[in-house]
Image (tube, rainbow, N blue to C red):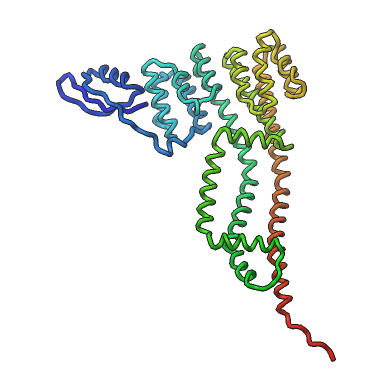
Length: 408
């Protein structure tokens, strides 16, 4: 939505000058004419987004709440435009508030919801757009938004479980790095100034440690500034989609994490496919959109062949079975049973629940393995630092001890 400053003449001949928000200059003029104003000038105000608005994203939970509220209001018989207006007033997220304002205006102009959502691909993924279009075409929009709310809430719960499992190791690693930086920057420089002045032979590891800590102690303001810049840069780098894909590919090669990422992919794929089929989306469109949720290369590579195989007359279970050992046999057999019984979407939902439970178990196993490994790393790091410092201290004490006079 753009902001325009206009000058117009009312029926009484009074000149009115104000601002108006509209998608284009032409539509701004049309709104003014509908208000019985004679348009004299309409000029767009160049309004740039703030830095906060550019980097802000719409959380999954925010979208889930929007879908839940919209579905509930529509089922209660509230007009769509009025329902969107109420949700807009309650929205706290700035980006979502802008989108809802655009949505409210576009509905009044007769545009479809899916058309508005398509303007924000960074917020609304293909699953969201496909379900919205299906609801508009079938006249069951409130049902589609209910399915979307469930889908988004399940996705949110799964991501929260993953974040919760990674919280403990993240805290331990952060604390370990923080203590290490404090030791190197403030504690060891005081010791290093003493050692480096003494004429004693130091181990090479101790020399390196003391020289590094001495440098950091002398330049600690620059070190702190560089650390903050690196941390901010790392956060921005991680938020980039290409970086996330690279890190996921790297992490998926690890034994325990590889299995976890496989289960996450299968949970997302089955949940999405089940939701789309329940909403009445055709099987080919459902599979095409669901395959896009796959992130593991082995799954996505085979998934791209599903659409072609189904066009040839094969079933989905047959298409999955073509890649022997790629998708689990349990999934293939369950889908085949669902196809025969005519309850494929129900079976897929049960599979999604099963793989989400598997993710939870894998996360518990991962944290159980990670905890002793982290303790071992902390112990080794502390031990190495203690040995590097205590060893030379004993040498100094030995040199300072008075020699015993010889016995005559």
